Image (cartoon, rainbow, N blue to C red; front, side, top):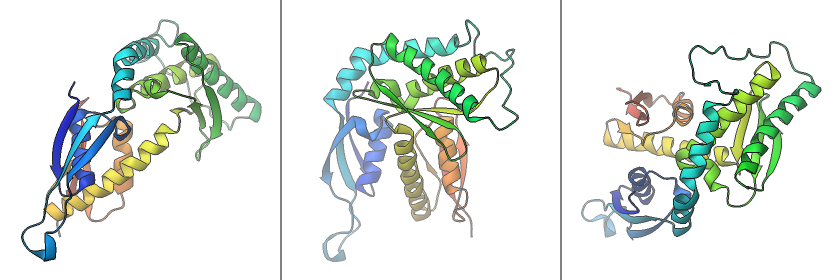
Length: 260
């Protein structure tokens, strides 16, 4: 795994984004040093300068990654495969639990939340992780369960991979036990909200780059949920179109300026 890189871009932020793509991590896993600021030359003379940065993985991130990341991901993903008492949750022959057809009562919502919390707690207990689980109601009626505590980065994983696997576990087991599906969103320390804000920034910068360069800009590979966020953010932007390109796990959003 590459631990350090030097990248260039029109701005410092874009240079850092390129480095994150190359290293395959999120920004909170790195530190960086600006070697050269981007922008115009002094008094407007000469061509624009390119920003240049050195980016490296934080020592704390490396220690955590090397000691526990593989163990946690393997465990959670194996749980996702047997989340319904030995049944493969991804098997095409398995009939999914039906969606709740009527509005649930407060008591039923409490039962759904209790089942989901119980599943999360069993995973935490399995790894000796002490954390609290805070419950919220989302904008569309979904139950949001946010795991809060110290040193929980290993529950998120690279690009949220472990968190996504945990989401599968909780959704599958809760649906099986309840006999119907109600949306439950699992989060860790508000990661999904922070990630969405970051994705919105990345999307807007891609628009600016695409217009400035007059051609398509391909973002770094993202999960389907992350790609959906980018598509939604730019859906009403008349200046560009978006499309997904490539095969999993390297599928990415391409932002293309519209022809005038």
